[in-house]
Image (cartoon, rainbow, N blue to C red; front, side, top):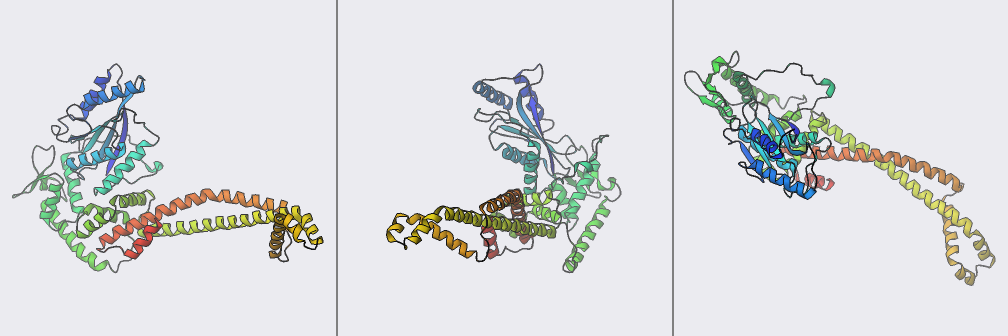
Length: 469
């Protein structure tokens, strides 16, 4: 997972524009924190002369905009921090680059510097406030931090990482004591737990997971491990209870036996499972012939959005998602039917009201037409009025024995229906939006679950669902 923050960078008080930009980019590109700038990447600028290029871009914008303010925002910084042991520095840099590209839509030059001086790998993404064409500036819009976090979460899911579960404000803990920097042994223990959570088949596969996480392994009488920033190898036996080589092998043996038991018990189990964790596990694997076929055939980003929506709604099981999709569709149909019924009655009232008005206006003409013995000459002279009068009489006959209502009564009923329709429309738009989101999320998650089961989605059902989208 990755925690993000968007920070506006101003011209420092008493500093020049050039010095302010250089200080901010130099801190991000610090060779001691980025392995000699090996973990620095850039877009639309050079990593060696980023400060000079940002300065030229910003001055060109000021020249075109013809304005200049004190404490002007000259750049923005995205801080993106990852959970210890979940991502390698190289992958963190790629995720940071993709996050910056999507958030700025490729309109701003930026650098991505991945720092490894802390227990957690984190990115410093600095992008120029003025765009590449020097015509506009990036504006820190309302809730831009939430938009940035959502983009970051989507990219983390696409890379098989977990995302941060949102918690209500009243459940959050206020930090009063700040923890000290995590020790190397604590980080290693977390990485071991992460490797064991992937359920390796044996000890060798377990060590491969640690190597993939960026650790060096030294085999011998006592297996030892070394991570980034460590000067010496640390033996497993010195990590404490539960982390010796023998205890880890014992845990792996229990995992293998649990796998066999779970296979036999899976068909009999009726308990609900945590679908979100299951989906994230499928994405994290990202392997296998079935997944590759599916990824080529469908848009992976749609499924990532579905999983993120699933989490935002606080859903945990597939049954909850199916129930929400069904109930939202049912409510939409009810509201839609009610609006259609009201509109039908309003059309009837409008038509009947017109007939009553035209009947009274043409009554005298029709009486004279009848007194003339239905003269063809009189009919030709007043044809339109006579036809309107006949149409009104036909409409009244359809009412049968019912009393013809007064125009004032119809006007009152029409206004009442109009008010009811206006009150229903906000709910109609809301339930329609919810129904669409739940249906699309269910459809995309169904496709992902089909991959896990090793089968392709039913083509007929797929066509029907694509039409509904």
